[in-house]
Image (cartoon, rainbow, N blue to C red):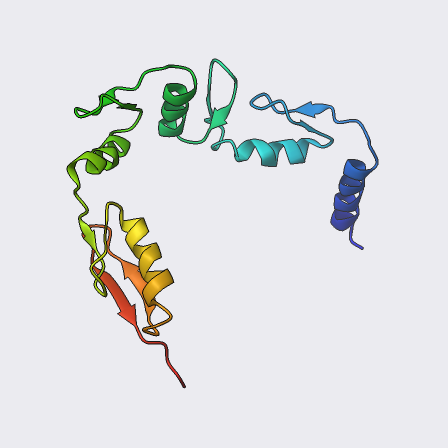
Length: 157
């Protein structure tokens, strides 16, 4: 066992021996028995530039994640309102999906039967569940720009 391996083993054993954990993360308050462990942990908080919620101290790697957290957890602000039923949403995309329930719009059509869907993911799940086995097809790609889905037959070699 090399010196470096020995030091790592001692450090690891401290975590199991119920030893003291004097090193504390300033972002999430998690405690560590070793300064190196703390350093590695803090790197995961966004490279030293964490975004911390001023209300609950939860940390986020991206500013957009913090914004979304603030909007959903610490305000009642729902700026996107349905013109049909006045239901409100945090995110514009969620409103768009909801409006389809009123308009009947179902833009994603199955290539194998007459079923239509409001969301691409539901179409893909439908194809995988209902058509993949019977037609011996593999869903290779779902083009997110439109509803083109590419299929292939598995090799029987």
